Image (cartoon, rainbow, N blue to C red):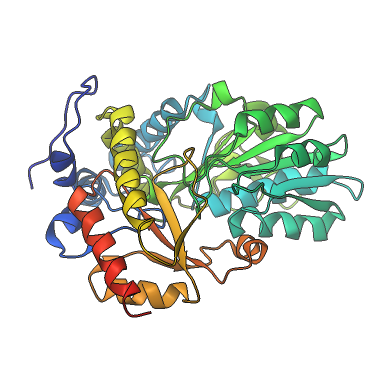
Length: 411
């Protein structure tokens, strides 16, 4: 496959050339509309992982030989690349994790258990992914703190008036998704971060959905933590990032113990390593880190505003056609959203709809999308979710809508 790498400063975006970078997309007869679950991988990322195992495979930070030195240099260069990509002040603020889920658990079990008492509360929203609910529930059970939940307005956006009453002087953590994985709605995180600061609470942003679509600058956001996964931004699975402000991370105790996160171990006591290694015990996912860095290079080689405009074009086209289908309702039909569209049919289970679409080679997601509290709040069993990426085409959208219409004819 010929790899197309446009100039980083180029303002042009060719959807067909972009699509050609993804071997599975090009070789499959399936219309893939499940990028919110995991994105497909460009050849550049696949090659970077293969190249590491073929030319540089060695453990990092430990051995004295040349191969380990090469792997370590690549690994730490990748950390610097991540830091620059999201606007962190220093690479010390970049902790590699398995993904967003592990990153949030790390905050809960390190910062949370050290700082929360029964008088404190944690604020989340009803539309959160389970990964941004369950760790806080566990923390509340451990510390006696209370979990508070921001509900939604009539457009399924966060009820900010209620948020202002829930976030008070006893709030210790405000943890909110940058964008909903169900509806794609982009949350007003800047406002929530400011509200947290006013009461001395820390802000945690779940950026799993947003990272592939929106430019992120954590310094400008001034959030305390920002977490995301590589596999939703064209990178490999099993690798993610926790950004945290250096001062907060320095004050936090380690979460997991083992090799790499220590300076000295003895039975009389152990001293811990400096940042970021204090939070990275054991052999890391080296190939995953390098694949993530390659995915960042891939993204940076395109004009992100052009990518977003194209995704929004596909979303608008799908929306306009879906709304013409009798009995179909879009969940979270607002303009301020990512390229995600969730819908339901009157009296038809989402899984049945998705099965009919799959029989027509249309890959979508159906169910509760790891957001069961939201489904309970909306009083629905789940939704059918189609999520678009720049490797999708207008033909993909038309094939999808045609398949939905055909499915509706069975009901």
